[in-house]
Image: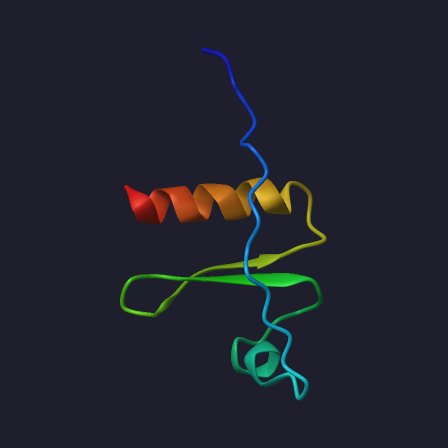
Length: 66
């Protein structure tokens, strides 16, 4: 089995001037990604400075698509 890294994706970025989303989702640092499920519940919370954060983000989105 061969692993092919995901192609780069570009995601919309929301930057709240008063950090409402940051505080609501209890983020622990920046950058931070929140992945919401179909019912708008929090599916994944990914701190962007962690190892392989973009790959974890891609896998979370792909798992929701399937």
